[in-house]
Structure formats: C-alpha cells, structure tokens
Length: 369
Image (cartoon, rainbow, N blue to C red):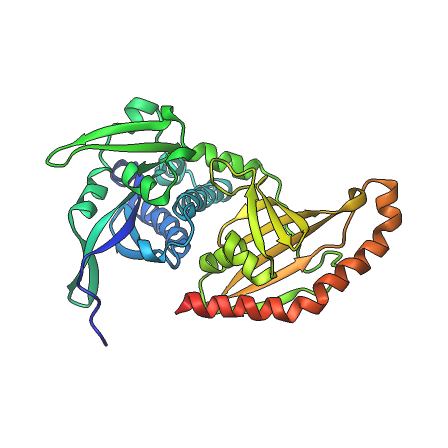
C-alpha cells in the first residue's frame, strides 16, 4: 500500500463537540449515559461522508476534514455543518419521545447540545501506527476554538462557529450580516475572527418546512430514471445541482442562478436554463444536500411540474433516482390543456433521456477519478 502524500495540504477542519458531556457523564447512571452517547455518535458518524473524512474520535467530539481541492461547491461546508446538527437534533428528539426511563441520564438528554467549529488552513498527515492523523498549527487552532466565549456573548449553546479564514476560502463572507461577526483572542495564536450561526434556529426552520418529495408511487410523467454513479451522495448531489454541471448533463447552453441568498442556493433559488433562445426556469422548492433535491418547472397556462432527484447510497457509490411528476394547474385553461402539455414535455425529454443519463454517468466517473 502506497504511503500518503506527506506534503503540506490545505483543508477545511470541522469539529463537532457535544457540550454538557462531562457533567452528563459525572452526574448520571454510567450504563445509560454510555448508551445514549453511543447512540448519538452512532447517528453522527455515518453522516460524515466523502469528501469529508474522519480524522479522530474523542470522548465528546468528532474531528473531520476535507481537502480544499475536494470541496466542489462554495456552500458545501455550510450545508454540511447544518445537516450534521440536524442529525444530532433529530437523534436526540427521537430519544426524548421514545424513552420512558426515569433515570437521571434519560431524563437529562435534553441538556446535551452540539457545537461545531469550522476552520481552514494548512496541515500535514502523520502516520501513527496504522492510523493517519492531521497535524499543524491550523489544526491546533481549530481545537483551541472549542474553548470560546460564544455562549457568554450570544447566549447560544447550539451553534456553528466558522472562521473568516474558512469563509474567505468559500467566498461566503457576503452571506453573513455584520452583526454575526465576532473575534476571540487565543493564547499564542492571537485574534481569530469568525461568524456564529444559530443551529437551533436552523433545526426549527428545517423541521417546520413542508417536505416536497416526489416518490416512486406518485403520478409520474414517465418511469423514474435509475442512474448509478461511483461517488458519494454528497458528490452526486453536486452533479445534480451545481449550475455548470447541471448545464452539462441537461445539454443547456448555460445555467444562470437567480434569487440566491447572497450566493447561497436554497429554496426559492431559480435556475434559468438556456437552450438557444428559450429559457426554462427551474425553481428549488426543497433542498436536502446528500439526500434529495426537488424543483419546480413553471410552465404556460399556470401549469407546473415537480422534479425530484433522490440519492441512495449503494456501497461505494450512489443511485440517483430522477422522477418527474405530471404537471398540475389550478387554472381552467391549464387543466384543459394538461394532456397536450404532457405530450409536448415527453417529446422533449424522452428522446434525450439516454444522452442525459450518459452525461451524468460520465460526470460521476470524472469526479470519482
């Protein structure tokens, strides 16, 4: 087996730390406390997928990283940290609903919270026995940032702290308001600037958002497409949604983004897909990186058609399942002309189906390499 490159690399570092862990372990029944923490980590760890890699597990934290060259969208780290918190919150909520045990551990699950630190910088890979670990000043800085004054200054105990070094690399500084920026003086390192995102608010927003998902049992315009690609669900999601890659596999001349949130794609963002002189608007209505994305095509006469691309992990790869729901309209003319519009859509999509599938597979092979 070839040894890993020992040269200096640039990477994003992500530490997910369960706060309240020490107090929880000290003051509760160890058998139940151990089971609760194992269950939380059992849900968190599988959520860390390529291009993220786990560098180490500690008693109360997971340290993961992604080399900068492997991160293919500027908002990936923002989406990833939010998803990671939502996995934790969902797991904790499930325990609270399903347990009737009165012991101190089970009664105090809600006291546990997750804080996430995101930093960017240089590192080297060190071999320790049969393990590979990251080392370097920026790795140390990431861990030192776990001890901060965020709770005292903001009142938040469930948050993501993202350093400005990471934000500048992502080109996402403009996404944040001036009021979200803070700084911390770290001994021997100096002042570190960062933003803080409220993860409880992100979780409540996701939980309260209606899910728009076209499954295989829906009234489909045509049979679902099954497309295997040799990459992780997160990279497959990039193929489905990054404007330049989407333009490539749908055969568009160009895909332009409108209504982004300061550059961040989310529900409400619209892709303008240019095919010659024609523009086909595709509006994002449900955005779940690594899981599925649903968008709406706005058609003439008040008709609209939903498209869902679902990502199912299969071994070392992903099965992309693409489904078009039959168009719908609340307007009389739309209902009257629906049949004709369906025929027109099929005449455009079906002849190009195999070409699109071939292009998606080719992109998967290219990114896997």
